[in-house]
Amino acid sequence: MDYFLHLVVLGTIYSILAVSLNISVGYTGLLTLAHAAFYGVGAYAVGILTVEYNVNFFFALLLAMPAAGVVAAMVSPILRLKGHFFILGTVAVQLMLTQVLFNWISLTKGPFGIPGVPSPVIFGLKLNTPPTFLLLSVPVMIIVVLLAARLVNSPFGRVLKTIRANPSVAESIGINVDLYRLRVFVITAMMAGVAGGLYASYTRYVHPSAFDVVFSTFILIMVILGGTGRWMGSVLGVVGLITIQESVRFIPALPANMVGPVQIMAYSGVLFAVMMLRPQGLIGAYKLE
Image (cartoon, rainbow, N blue to C red; front, side):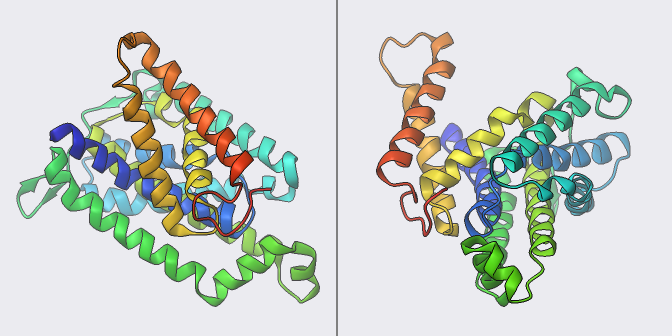
């Protein structure tokens, strides 16, 4: 039961990531492979603040949001790139930030990571087990999902849909496309920072390898599987991919050292099938182009 609840905790964290990425990919048309980088910034912000400076977790979590947002703003010149060049630009950002985490040893401890991140405490209850941590991760996930739903259904969200449909038309009617893309890029990075902060306090250890381009791809597959342009599709994609991931563990006679490679093959197969048979995902509003 504890392992199942552990998966539920991860599911809530991944849902925050997928919902935020879907705002960028599904509603704005910004297909990015740098989301794990901002997730990592949030995780390291919480890890460094709580371990090195004894900052309260909840205050550190609040600071993780602007930390991720500032980093996103710093790399935002890549938004000038279009199409495949933008995707390659986000890959470059992801690889660059991963190397920063590995090599800025005085701040991030480099390949040693940051152990001993304290568990959150609410009203004297230490949230250091899956059942107790759900008391935090579920409400935070619900808040983020509701905020995302409100955002995409607001006038701001309708502008994003216009930009996604045809940026040239959006510009012709006076919409500042570059400004809206920048806002989305920063807002979704801040959401990813929240997820990273939760992850750091749950696992109690932060390491650069957890925030690499492979994980960015993993998040994107969740969004594509569930469907772009539907926030509920993101949550469905998380459930689907975690189910696939864990099902591989129960394949008879599969050696332990083959579980990881087979999981990656399964993800690839699912992605290929979805892109071929239903490009918009299970309940998506748009085809990924």
